[in-house]
Every structure is written in structure tokens, then in C-alpha cells.
Image (cartoon, rainbow, N blue to C red; front, side, top):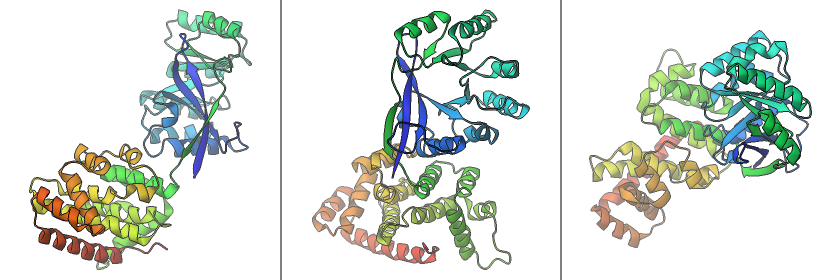
Length: 410
């Protein structure tokens, strides 16, 4: 599945690109589609920021994102890290008390705010102390009027940055420069260019976000509950599964919070891992899901036998995530980059290096019945082949039993 967006560079006075305005597109045609503004913003955020909080589309520079009234009132920007993007408050927003309350909240939380296509008016005056950038559309606001407004604010000591939009000629750039604008955007520099990328389907996005949380040294229960609640299918499966585990209770568990408290951190980490993995590969062979569980258990158990100081949770994640590229249809390097994994796990998954990398290679060799490699790796890891064979068999039995306890994929 592909996602599309257009981006137009934002330049400074030296014509250096400092960021990009990102614009939603629903196909390769470089024009705004016939969709609602709220829908466009939601899709743009989901396709480009949801999994990691950052967007490759901005090439590591600042991203400018349009936010209509509804998205602001519903505090959508607060779902993302404050450094993810610059919030452009669309000119179609009503400058009412509710909007002012949101703007003040975002400002105090450290987000960068811009007034898009700004037209000076008394209704917007009370918003100015809480914004960092004001954008003037030179096709709507004449340059002399914009220049007067800029000089007046700067004379009052304002630190606001002013951006000129629709700069279409060299002469307009020079005039805007002299009028006091700090940033520039328009056809004189570049027309919006289309960017196409592979995007994760919703179930895979949810899974990746859950993987991010369980990969942290301390599990954030509230964040996991919040993620689960966004996916109806996953919510159903999780509650159904935890009630299967607690069928002896007099009263069924009916909320995520109850389920999380009951499980505790370690069981929650595993519980989310299993069900989320199953959820992500509903349209893939069951063997892929089974193998990811079996490898995870193998790596965990063998790590405990080989070295008492090895973190068995790291070994478990190494085995589980060894098939992440196949599960989520993305390059392993790109996925690992979005997960807060320790360096030994990253090296094992990407380069098959380190102690964990050796254990993972041993698991893969057993899956492939590569006896020559198994013998060589056993010698390198100083472990008996009989121990590895028994661990492999135990991991298959364990994965089989656990798979039977999970809710079906239907």
C-alpha cells in the first residue's frame, strides 16, 4: 500500500532549506484531493508520523503541518512529540475562546505554532503572544500591508518569525526580504513535489507502536492502554484472551486497565507481544507467527543456559523480531530504527553480530536443518549440540501450547 504527500520547501534569507510544508495527496496527481480537511490531516499524520513521531518526508528538517479547527480542539497534536512538526493553524479556524485555550495549552507544552495565511484583524490579536511564526499569503495580503504589520510588531520587541508564502518571482523575494520576512515559500523556489512511500496498514501500525512500548526498559501501562483502545479488533482479542487466562475469577475482566493491573509488567510485555504479532499477520501464513514465537522462546531459554548475566528479555525480543521484516513488510533496518532496542539487540537483528547474534544464527540454522552451521556455532558458543537440540524441541512444544491459548484470527 502506498501513501502520497506533496512537500514544498521553506527557505531562509540565504535561500537555505530549513523545512518543508507537507501536504496530503491521495494519489500521484499533485493536487489537493476532494476530501475533508480533517480527513486529510488525519491521513497525513497516520501515514507519516504515527509509528515514530517523525517523518522521513521532511528529510530531517522541520515539517509544517496544516491543522484545521476540529483537529486542534480535539488536541490531536498532543498525541505526537512536540518536536515532530510545526503546527499551522489554518486560516479557516474560528478565533474563539475554545481555540485560544488549545493554543495556550500547546504553547505551554512546548509546541511550535504558526498562523497560516494570516490576515491582521482584532479577533486574532490575543493569539499573537502564543505563536512563533506568522505566514502571510502575498496573493491575499499586499506586501506593504504585511510589511507595516511586521515593523509594528518588531518595534514592540516581538520575536515572531515571519514567513512569506506564494513568492513567485525574484523581484517578490527581494521585496519580501526588504519588508522584514525571515522565511520564504513559493513557486520561485520550488513547486510542491510528490513523495510516495510504502505505508504500514493500520493493524501493523498498531503492532509497531505496541512493540515500541514493550521494548522500553520500563513499560508505560497508560500508553499501552491508549494504543490498544484505538484498535477495535485488537481490543476484543486482548480482553478475550485475558479472560481465557482468568476464567476462574468470579467476575470477568471488562476493561484494559483491569487486564493490565492483573498481568503485571513482565506478563504484560509477553502478552502484548503474542497477541499483537498475531494481529499483524492475519493475512500471512500461520507458520510465520508460530516461528516468531518459537524463535523467541529458543533464544530466551538458550541465553539463560549459556550466560547467567545475559538479559533473557533481550534474547526473547531478538528471536521475536527476527521475522519483523516479513511480518510488517518493511526493511528490518527501517523498523529497528523505530524501536527503542538496546544496541546488542539491534546488532543481532541487523548484522547477526554479538552474543545474541550468535544465538539467533543458531536458531535460524536449526530452522533450516543446517547441521554444519549448528556444529560450528555450538563450538563458538561453547554449548553442547544436545543441549541446543533439546532447547529447540522445548521451544517448539512451548510455542504450540501457547498458540493454542490465543484467540483465533477470525
